[in-house]
Image 1 (cartoon, rainbow, N blue to C red):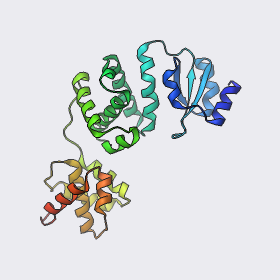
Image 2: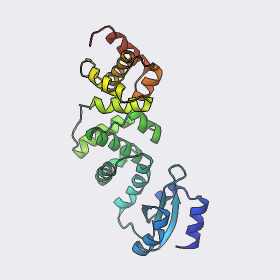
Image 3: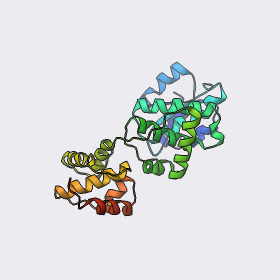
Image 4: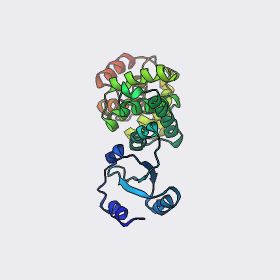
Length: 246
């Protein structure tokens, strides 16, 4: 491995944003794999270190040969900021390539398209990803994500998903709150009886009522935060359901 590449890793001064203007390719790897990558793919032009995720990537000279692949580079870099299962990551990148080929990046930014595809794919696979997670990671508003999602559904022929598995969201929210599986099990039982259309509000109300039944102290403000809903909506729906027998 070139000495200057080693120095770049040690100093961690190269920013991931520099990849976007590069005409070369990016390969995600560990530090130990650098010699293997260089032997298999060719000369390493630059070593990149993401200071936030501590991931290492290398730019390999001359690996990108077409405009579509060049436009995909930001997707490869940004998707690493969001912890996803490998099969979800692969599906999102496949759909992102289709969006690039259909020139949808002229209507929305690459980050907005990536966020929307992550949201749609996780929703389809019943993985409890909340829009607030995407807003925090990519600094994008909820309205832009949903608007972009609608465009992608229409232009890429994606299936519109209306039903959400409330149980998965209950498990995730209970875990974020730091409670055990007893609260999750009780909440899931209640969620099947509560008549609230919005799945996240139903999940939050179920958790609060289950916590009250189990004599657990759950703060409404904290519960609303982890559920990605407003505290006012939570309080209103708790009030409407507190006196019902389940």
